[in-house]
Structures are given as C-alpha cells and as structure tokens.
Length: 349
Length: 281
Image (cartoon, rainbow over all chains, first blue to last red):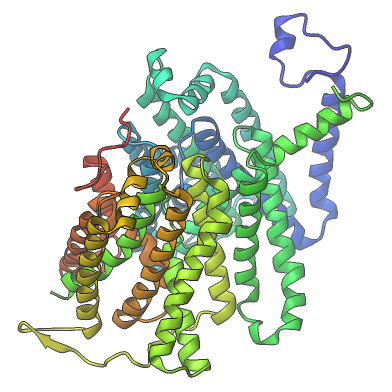
C-alpha cells in the first residue's frame, strides 16, 4: 500500500519497485548496515552471515520454482551440489578463473534441473515431488560413485578466490555474498514482474486455465526449473569457495527440506518472504546449537554427544509444524499485517 | 531368492503407506521413522526394562497403535482439507521430529534384537536369512488378512467407501474421522510389525527410517498409490531387482529404487494397479 498523499501519476511510477524517498533512504541505510555488519560482528557471526547469504540465494531459487510456479522441489540441495562441483571441477582441473565458473555453475545446475524437470510434462503435484526426491538421491549418488571426475566420497578441493594475489578474508567474502545476494534479489524481484513471472503465477494458480489462455505449460515449467536451479548453482558456487573442500555429504536431503521449510516459514510467493524465512530458520538454528544446546549439555551430561544435532532437527521440525498449523501464509503475511496496522494506526482501516 | 523374500518386507512397509493413503489421501512420509522409533522402543523394553519377549512385543504393538492415533489426532486432522502438499510437508517434518527424538534418545548406536536367530537356514535349496523368510510369510499373511477384512467385514466396507468419496460416505452415516483414525492406528501396528521384521533382517540403526522413504515409497509408486495387491507385487519386484542389480554391481544397490521410481513416474505415474486418478495435463 502506498503511503498517504502518494499517487502514481505516470507509468514509470507505477512500475517502480522503490517508490518513495523514504524507501530509498531505508535501502541505503540497510545496505550500509549490512556491509558494516561484517566489520563489527564477531567471527562466528560473520560465518553465520555468509551461510545465511548462501542459503538465501538457494531459497530465492526455490521461491521462483515453488512459490511462483507451484512446482515443489525437494532436491534443491542436490542442484546446489551440481553448482559446487561444476565450480570445483572447472577450477581445479581446467584452471578457469572463479569469475568464469560463476555463470557456468548456474548454467550446469540449471541444465541438471531441466533434466529432472522434464517429468513435469506429464506429472504434477505430489508425483513431481517424488521425482525431485529421486533427483536428490541420484545426483548425490553419481557425485559419490563417479570417482574419476568428482573425487568420490572424499570430495574435491576448490582453489580459493584471489583478488590481487590475496585470499579473501571472511569479511570480504561476506561482502561478496551480500553483493551477489542483492543482485539475485533484484533479478528475482524483476522476474516476478515480467510476462514470464506472470505465466509462472498463472500455472501455479490453475494450470488448466493457464493453458487455455495460451500459456505453454511445458516451456513455462521448464523455464521455472531452469531459473530455480540456476539460483541453486550460484549458491553452490559460493558454497564451494567458502568451504575450500566439498564432498557429497554436505548436500543432503535434509538440506533440501531446510530450504523448503524456509519458504514455508517465510511465506510463499514473495521474495521478501524467502529472505525472512531463511533468516528466521537460521537464527533459530544458531540459537539452538550455540546457546540452548550447551545449557542442556550441562543439564543432561548423558546426552552430551548427540544433543546439538538432535535438537536442531527437533526445533526445526517444530517451528515448521507450528507455521503450517498456525500461520500457513508465513512470516511475510504477518509482517504485512503489522505494517498496515502501523500505517493506518489510529484507524482500523 | 533372498531379494525376493526381502521384497515381502518392502511390501509390508508399502502396505502401511497404502492403507493411510487409501482412506485419507495422505502420504505418510514419516512412516519409516515410525518404524524406527518403534524398533528402538522394543530394544528399550527388552534391554533396559528386561521385559519378557511376548509382553514387550505386545507393548510395542500398543505403542504403535497409540503413535498412529496421536499423530493423526494432533498433526494431521487440523490440516484436513488443506492442499495436499501442506500435508506432505507436515509428514516430512514429523519425520524430522522422530529422527531428532531417536538421535536424542539413543544417539547413533545400533542394536540387534537379542532374539534374532543367527546364521542362515536352508529353504528350497538356497540359504536365506531367517528374518527374510519371516518377513515374507508375515507379508503374505497380513495381505490375506487385509483382503479378508476389506472384502467381508463392515469396517472394511466402510473403509472402502471412505476411500471412494469422503463427502458421500459422511452423508451415508459413516464416521469418516473415525475411519481416518482407525487406518492410522492399523498402520501404526503395521509399523511395529515392520520394525520387528526389519530389525531381524538388518539391524536397528539410526538410518533405519530410510526404509520408509527409500523402499516403501518406491513400492507404493510402483504398485499404485491405492492398491493393496499392487503393494505386494511392487515389493517383490523391488526386492528382486535390487538383489539382481546388487549382484551385478554392488554399488548399484542403493540407487536402483530411485531409478525404478523415476522410470515408473515417467512411464506410468499411476503405478501398475493404481487408480488412474491423477489429472494429466
């Protein structure tokens, strides 16, 4: 909703994402805040921020695929793995520069996504979910067994990104992640507003009606798969450079479900929601593993070994269950309600 | 031969899925973890509390029924009428919940049942694991029992009507909610049986729940989502292909179910015996 006294009088104004001066100001302040966050926060929180950025990019991809186009994918982690391995293989075996592998990682992940998206031609809903689960397991199996190329279960080393001969520090890597995240965010936001984005939404809402109106279903779905997996590949590129060593165990089915949980918690069908969800679940995870688990470890020494691991699973499951039951439209919906309330404050509507 | 017998176990796992799906159109992805948690419960009863075997198994069955009831009542029923995928997500989250509980409770430890028979036995000229043979026999018996219940009893009739149409059966005076509960309870008991048999064939480990996702689901898709004979045939086929493929290249063993699943999804998504209900585009 536009603030009081602001009207769209020209087409450009109607199209603008950032509409008012206050919004520009908020964005500038927010960017400065996030950039400086890397400088002033403790080491482990910088790592947390980087991981958050990586997850957020993957979740944005899932947002396009699932939130906009309605094609559930439970294999996002596998597509991320494809991106990460593409990066690793091209850099360590063929000596490409990291900047050249960035688009390659995305494109390869996208192509693998297309491969597993083709069943979408015939099946939908739950059956498609099954085929993406199969994708998850098959991709990881291939990565583990094809030892001559991928290094098998042991994994593969990735050369670090160097700028001017120096390796990136964690803080610099956070800036890189942030920059990439912002670019991907703008891209996602704009994809939503193009004809393709509207076709996605049409397919999600009612595929039969969409087809009758002249939307090419197969092409739309495949484009959605490609874009969604492209994002996963970019996230994989970041992941591969952040952890200089990658192996198949880093990309499990569990991670795929984390991504899906994030868009459910955040609220489907909005980019902001995707970011909200990723942040929320990452915060919950961080607090349970770093603050809650040690306390419980003290309390129950008998369970000390497994408690952090088990607790993060349980808490994650409970949070998502809570959202499915109580607020199926996610945090973003709640946020919008809150904003509306403050905008209108003394009046109810 | 061994694979064929293990296929009986897969069929049993799949029956638990089919039963719930048939009545309430929910795919219970947490089923594998239910099996695992019940197996751990049995180990707990036998090892820590030292109950006699018969009582422990009986208690396990009761626990299975209770678990099924509780899950349906507290997590699934509030979502009746929601989109299918909300329910799917819910069962997936339950899977995590159970995994977490198992990890919290027992860590990564694995156990073998104390009553598990050792060694191999001769059967029709081939040596097989006794557990696999038991699993096969149990699968056949339960299949016959289910067929009987569905065909000749009143409850079975009610379940079939509910499977056909919820609204119609409600208006005919069948308590649809009670049937949902009932099918979850039965499926919980099945989970207990599967837990015992799977523990006999392999061991009770933390990854045991994967039998639900990796095997049961494939069998269900292979046989058709709502077909009981389909589950049996699908289970046997999966067991057979898996052991044949494993004989050819051991590392293939893991991937065969998934490839089979992808294949069936592309060729015949409704399965071999399933109802052709899914809307094609």
